[in-house]
Structure formats: C-alpha cells, structure tokens
Image 1 (tube, rainbow, N blue to C red):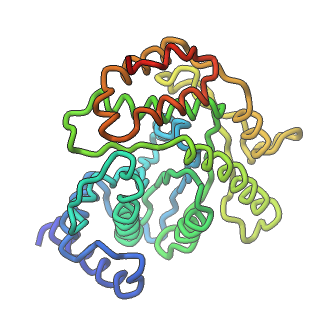
Image 2 (image 1 turned 180 degrees about the vertical axis):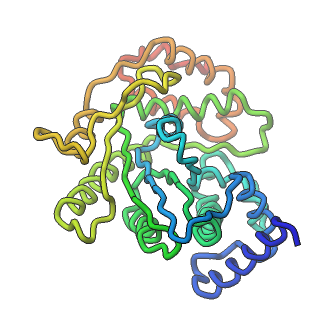
Amino acid sequence: MNNMEELTLKIKNIIESEKAIHSEDIQYLLPSHSALIAQIISNYNLQPTTSPTPEADMIFLGAPTGAGKDTLVRKLMLDNSDKNFIVLNMDMFRHYHNELSPTHEPISDKEFARKTNQTSYELYYIIQETILREFPGTNTIVTGTIKDLTWVKEIVERYKNDPNTKYNISLATLAVPTTESAFSIFERYLNMVNNRESDTSPLRYTDLDYHNETIKDFISNIRYFEDNMHNNPRARFFNSIQVYRRHKDMFDLSEDTLVYDSNKPDSEKCATTHLHDIMKSPCTIDSFRILNLLEIIKKNADYLKDQGLYKEILADLEKILPQLDKSKTDISK
C-alpha cells in the first residue's frame, strides 16, 4: 500500500468516526470523499515528525473581511521561513462545494458564501483533524474574521489540548481603516468579475452590511481574548497577541507593520486600543482605484445586473465614498 492509499484509508476512518460522533456537524462529507481530501492534504507536502514530543506554532490570524489577511499570511510565512507553516481557512475550500453537495444547484454570487459555508467547514474540519492526528509538529496558520467567538474558541481549544503536539498559540490581528476594508471587499469581488473565465462559476460576494458586522464583532471579540489573556493566565486561549497594520505597499513584505506585541507591552495602549484607533482613523482612497472600479462596473454591467448586484454595489460605494459625484456613479446611461 502506498502513502496516498494509506492516507486515504486513514481519512476514511476519521470521516466515519466523526460522523458517528458529530452527525449534526458532518452533513455532506462521506467516506467516498476521502480520496479528494487526501489529494488536498498531499499538496502541503507534509512529513511525519521524528520527534516523539514535537513542539509547533499555531497562529490564528484574525481580521475583518477586506483587511488583507492574505498579505499578512505571506509576511508571517516569510518572517518565519524556517518553520514551514501551512495555511488553513474555510474560504480555500469553498470551490469544492459541488463535489460534496448532492444537489449541484446553481448558486448566485450573492448566495455563494452562505450556501458553501457548511461544506467548506466540513472540509476544513476533517483536513485539520487529519493533519493534527497524522502529522504532529505541523506549524499552522488559521485565518478568519473572528466574527464567531465560539468557533474561534473551539479551534484554539483543539490545538491547546492536542495530545500529539505541544502548540504555542498566538493571535495575530490586522487592522486597517474601516473605509479601506469596505472599499476592498468591492475591489476584490469586482476584480474577480472582471477576470472571470466563466459566467457559470459563482464568485464570492461580500456585502457592506456583513463587512460592518465583522468590524463590530472583531473589536469586541479581540477585547474578550485580550482580557482573557491578562485575567486568566493559566486558562488563557492565546499566549500572545500581536497587532499589525496594513502594508503601505502590498508588495513590500519587508516593511515593518507590527505596531503592538503583548510580549513587549505598550504602557499607553493595549491591543484593542491600537486596533480601534487604526480602524477608526480617516482614510483616503486613491482616485485611480475608484475610477478603475467604476470602469469595471460599467464593463461588466450586464453580468452584475444578472446577479442582482448592480444597483446594490453602486449604492454601497456611495455610502463609503461620499466624495463621489453622483454623475460618476450613474454609469447605467
């Protein structure tokens, strides 16, 4: 039996045991999906550890939607190149939805996130479980918005209580002015629309209301974890908390963007205060970015109208960019 066959069999057993214990959580995954998951895991090029009691790092990277988590992931991996981090998040598994869902129903861009939440969660869960069981000592970065406090606590507890690896668990947070992250959710989506290869493959759309909810929940949940770290040192979720600001140049990973580290306390500001100050700070969006986005909307107007998003996106852009002249956004003519 080769390594892939062995891994597939182990995943099959994990799926069967987890479905038996957590039938409400594992609704779509079947033992027959074990080969797919084995292939995904093989892409990480993981190797079994030679240490009987390995130590490893787990970084939970938390930031509101649109903040730029992917860039901070790249920086953390570059700054810790000797540790060979793998990255896990639910979003990276959403495009496998039709391989798990028995209905294969068409999904609009607006529905994509909601309708793929369960299948992407199940893939994330089983992949994480397989790595923790079969590849002890794996350094891991998990990313998320920290909107769901219970979900984050469950993930952290799993790593804290892992019997195979002693994990040092830290929280890396990323803050940008709220206007910047709000604009970025539309910039990200519209660039995907503009570069799409097909009109039938759904793209992930995030609306402004959801963005604003993640902002509110993000600050309050970071405060929860910071209070927990200081008030319950023996039962804390995170050993340390770092705050990063967004890069001035998204391509310059050498830029020092760390503004707070609980290992080197700031006598004047805590992590939550740094985050709040950055996120509430004024922000000016470059006019070139705005005009470029309006051109993309104009070019892809028919697609956006088919998705029921054309008027919504224009209205939301006017909310976050009050400096826009009404005539500039009236591009339907």
